[in-house]
Image (cartoon, rainbow, N blue to C red; front, side, top):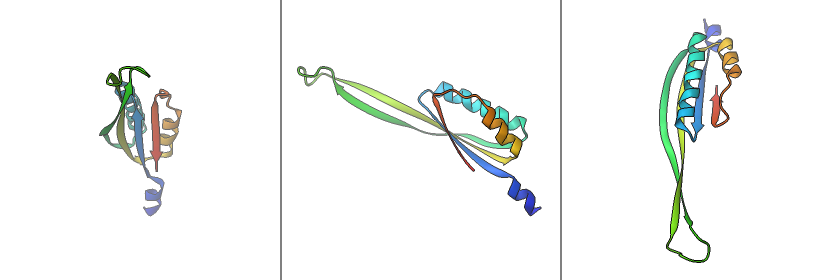
Amino acid sequence: MPNEKSQTQRLRIKLRSYDCKMLDDSLKKIIETARRTGAAITGPILLPTNVKKYTVNRSVHTDKKSREQFELRVHKRLVDICESSGSTVEELMKLDLPAGVDIEIKM
């Protein structure tokens, strides 16, 4: 019995993206793949969105008071995959996810 416990491992997957729709689509693919291989899933957990704001002068030399503001939002999600097997990890590695999504996997 202790040998079985050492073979099952918990995967923590953290996803980050600027586009929340692309992030949710990637999350659906990951959850479908994990459920298809028989792993238990905890989540998805929505983490707080980081908002970076930038203020820039509109022109270089004149109109010092005229400024433009931009913001950059980073959306984050967290999923725990419990009781995963080797086939779960293999299937997750085969997934084709968009380039705009940053994936961090911890075991």
